[in-house]
Image (cartoon, rainbow, N blue to C red; front, side, top):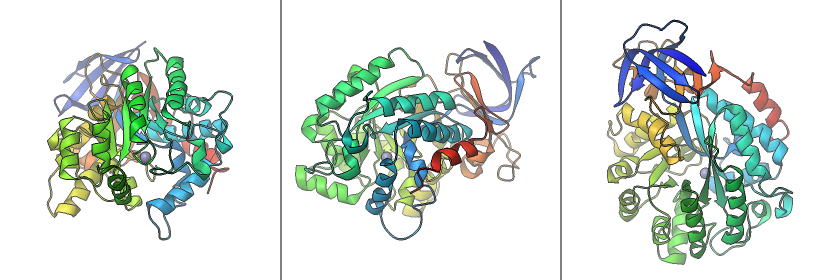
Length: 447
Ligand SMILES: [Zn+2]
């Protein structure tokens, strides 16, 4: 199928806003990009600034049920986690399909064309596997397809409740017993999606709390065997660092490094409380680092050294994580604005660097290196942002990227083409009223 779009402005490599750009699409790929041309006959016009697809590099879809219900009262990450576990207990594959479809539709409306789902809710109540032991993972893959997103399904190994502790309560639904049994189940999921271009089955080490170091190599091997991404929660909390140093005389980053879990295929999620050695190990191994600032501030985690990590060699990516909000423009600007608060200085991150984090760097970290860039042959993802809303009015060609990164919200995304498929038109998702889908899916889950 051939469709041509004509963009008032488009962000083209090597990072320039260009006017009057015709983008021809052939199937799921970009066929041709022609800047500075009048609208070709029959072309669909895209107003405002058109960007490549945004990548949401850290998602727990079911946390969407917590929004608004856990933002009040005192507490910390650990008390929030109890509320999160209560929601996890109510989910089954059907409810998860409905919730994830609606949540991913919300992501599509925000310009996200690929999501990394850090998936650990594997089994039924009491830890009993479903008839299909991958029923929950399959629900997530199906949800992404319905909503029009590519998915990196990061099958997460989660074996212990804390260092040396057995899984307890709702955590028993996360566990497979040991890493070998985890790998056998995850291998079956990967085989089921072999050859699918819109699905990457990757792996995750939940954290140093949840996977004993001597079993990490099994998860690492899985990622390499399937050439899939490998993600891990890293140093989100000081208590996690302290417990890790006490048990292993090493920080979480050092433990991952010592067990082969760092490298260009890897992503360290959060990377909030790092030592100088940690920064050097992550950067030196060119591991990606996924910052989730709206979650990190919601959970009072802290602010990670994003710019130092980038300078050390780690591509930085962005994730909505707990879904406190789903808005990658907000995540992007928070990376810069949080560093301003910590350092007392402005200007760590040019807007174009933040946009690169939200697009090409993120897509590559999910196993879609041929996305996130408007060039022939790339995935046909076109995300168009209004430049005439109350937030963005006044933007010029020169200021368009800064206007979008520092002032736009997800609500300014008016059109999304994902893998050649038009999933958002005039701010409306192809599945219909995404708000209604969310209300319906959330009603039985509200904590
Ligand atoms: Zn997470």
